[in-house]
Amino acid sequence: MYVLSIVLYLFSLNTFATSESIIEDRWRGALFIQANKNFKQDILVKEPRGTRQHILSVTYLDKGFNKVKDCLVYDVPKKREASTLSIITVISKESCVDNLFSKVSFKWDQIFNFTYSINDTKLELKMDDIVKIFNLYNLTLRSKGMLISFVDSDDGEVLKSGDICFDVSDKCNVLMPDQCILCPGGIQPAIASSCQSKTRKYCSDKVCGTRGELACVRGFVASGYQGDYCLNDSPIGYCSGRLRVVCIDGVLRCR
Amino acid sequence: MKNKLKMPNSIIAKFWPLILSAIVLPVIWHLWSSTGGGDSTNMSTATFDDDLQVFLGDIHENWTEGFSQKDVKNSSCDFEGNEASCSYELMSCYLKNQLNRKPLKLGHKFVLVETSSVKSNFGDAIIQINELKTQKNFTIKLFNNCHRIKLPQNIYSSGPVKTNELIWDNYNQKIWIDRFYRTMTETSGKEVPLLQLTISDRIKYCQERGGQLLESHVFDAASFYPSKTTPRGTSYKFRYPWGREDIDFSQVDKVLCEKLQAKECLSAQLIRELSRVPTGVSWSGIFYAIGSYPESFRNIINPMRNLKVSSRFQSFTSEWHENGLRAYWNGTLNYSSGIELTEKILKRMIPSGEIKGIAFRCMYYQ
Image (cartoon, each protein chain N blue to C red):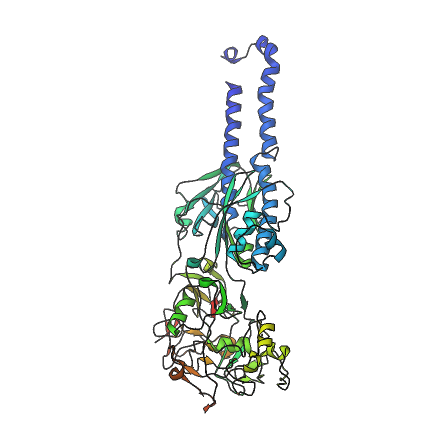
């Protein structure tokens, strides 16, 4: 019986390895990773004890090059005890924090210490003395005009015209990672913050400068203007003919 | 109780090699497989990624740089041989025939399962690959953007020399421009400019490819040789797109016609010499910035300035051969009544030869 249980345990570990290879495959097609800023890279996750925490999310591509999201959640141990790192798959626009206790699709057990690191080519999950390395391709391929997917299904989230596909704050912090490469048609930049180096972008087949549409971008540098961007007749944007630039819900438009 | 659980010494003594091997062998097997032994998942993953990177590098190189004529000739592919980049047909051929492929050190074999494209998808190619050793399937999407240039980030001034129609910058936006005119390649396979489309069809054409009809001020940005521009204006605007120097029109030859394809370049010999040479290259890398065909744009600031007239329909002496000059085209195919040859900023009429076709290109935000 003792021998049988060992064999069964080891068999389950190997089955487990197969599942892990599925994770490896789908994360090869990661488009971007968003880490919870409360947990810095290469620093052990120790707090808050006895809670389940969202560590990061991996947004990867399905066969149709649409988005799917895996949330990585960690049960921070109360004291010196083994814990669990789990993957929860959600619809990409859903929040990981809202899905902390949703169905787990994969997990690593018996972890006493956990941290992670990310760069453009790999994600490393560091569990005690084991480092799981996940190779990431799309983070570099996308700049070369290529994307890759290892997922067989095509039921991911589809971007549509009018969706925001990239967004930044007034201080140029990225609010939404750039996914405009997935837009079904064109892209339009929009002045929606005071950031001078980046703009919000929409998936859009419309052109700027016409009635009701986004104002065209003149730019902060060319206008020489340093004040609040969000005002009627803002010099940061321009419109066709006699249309005026107006600021509606923080976005410069033409009216 | 303890005695009940205790295993009889005689059984252990009798079967100890079997028991030991039953415990140790699975442990060794597991450790061996998890550290990448044999053809197990982890080992093949490590080597798979090495070979995959080489394979993807190969695909990217051939997609963006094209193939050599030699490779194409040696293949059994049936298409009009050229070494064009971003060619779906050539990429399919490459994958089917294993052309021009770098050897994979770790023995993986990437095989084409299916390719799909194209016209419904802006000319992007989607290819499905199977790796025989690991039986992994994956899909690659290749974007059809080989024939575009990225407009360098700067402050730009649009409009003719000595004027500023619009001063704008692209420090917070990435703009890509077609290097060439849009051609009939997609419909007839011929690299002949698409000339007979109304303005609304041009707008639709570019929209269907994820872009929009090139804006007049963006064309100026890609045409005017860069000079210092501030919010108040440009210090100096150069007349020609290739740089600072002017042009000597006295000797009509291939060199001159490569810079500016005007009426005098249409002699039989020069046409032959220039047949596969894109002309009128600007500092930014776009072609036909001057000469060749008239070109239509969208002009947000001044919709009455939407046509570059400089073309092969005028002689070298025409005043239209200069950066930033625009006429108005009403967008219909009746050129004789639909074109107004008054430069609205300079407020003067500049005559032109008969216009027999108007080209266009698209621009794209990234």
